[in-house]
Length: 105
Image (cartoon, rainbow, N blue to C red):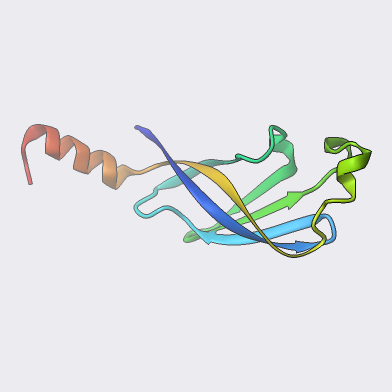
């Protein structure tokens, strides 16, 4: 199976130090392996709950990530747009790729 990647811009709703978003799973995905936040190197700050047709993302700002000058700039309300990289597998797309290689349409 081939692991596929898709980069998406996600709008997180901000509430104090938590950010929450719900997005649809990639089209034709069979299983989402992970969602990697592209704005931080701390993968532990982002939690993923995968459903059949949606992904619930939770991101928690931790004070240890910021120095004292940046902690005051954390957005505590409203919406913030950030990019994530979704890693998934797709049985349907793998099958389609094999049929293309064989010349079957």
